[in-house]
Image 1 (cartoon, rainbow, N blue to C red):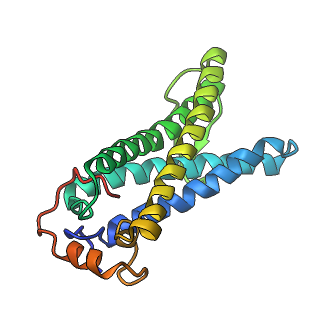
Image 2: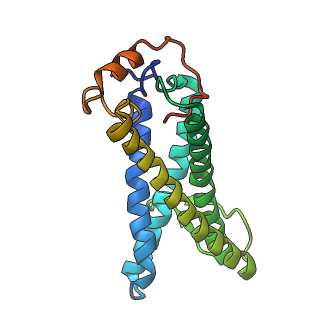
Image 3: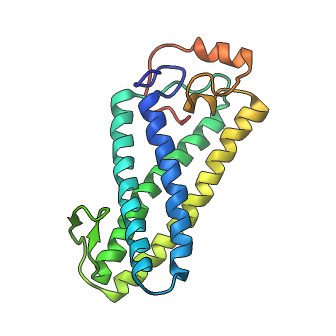
Length: 207
């Protein structure tokens, strides 16, 4: 498996960062939607701390993904994809990246404005980024929740588009974010994809 991104697919590092982020989003979404119903006590405090730590981890992964994309480039668009689909994919991916950065930051603001300490898995403390403020806390909390639901909508659209491409257009959009050979790709499309020119560009939208 290539670590950098060849012309026809995403490389090993990009795949690892992508799927690790996906798993963490699912986990933190479940925790975030259920932790408010927990009874007050040590278990609830631990669950909130875990939620914050995973959020900080996602923030770090987003930074790594952006840096790696600048270093490794991106594969060419899947051959035969209409230009309008590429543009929608570009906007969707941009929106997801922005939200994956903004949601943890808003959570950090929620925590700081409430005056709570912020730790990463109990290993070290992070500084407050704002002072205590009830009004700011309430506004940041609302923004945090709103952006989460917007992210859920965009991720669902992103995943739905990938499966649509795989099941109906039978192209390599989904397969190239998985290790080679994990998914069957239509022979014609696979051949066209492998024949793509060797250059890569960080502007490709098909992640």
